[in-house]
Image (cartoon, rainbow, N blue to C red; front, top):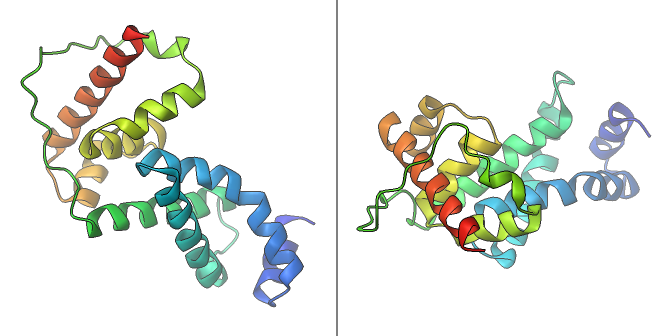
Length: 174
């Protein structure tokens, strides 16, 4: 079943189509949730909440652009809303540790498995994790991140650089 037919069937309330839709997109969206949330339980909750929103707003999808990208945006926003709700977000992580420097051509990230990287991302301080995901993985600009998180662009940039340094340090220790 192609995406247009699948969407139409979901909108008609066809349970088989809804299950097919969920089964098609849930695994990728779970990966997105795992990157933003600290635990798999929180990620599962966000996946469920996000997919409910997807089904509730499916009639608003206009077949313009990627359906997966549209779903991803809803899932990311669901995760960000939850992080904001928990009031854990973006207390600028000031550390008294040694200053880290990351060069633009740093390739330390190329030598680690995806699951190991995901585990390290989940252990990051909240501010680092959210900005890293939004910038490095989702492709938001620092200006967009600043608007979404109600922070300055410079805070977004420094959180991203610190997140990279955090990851680099932990990868090098392995």
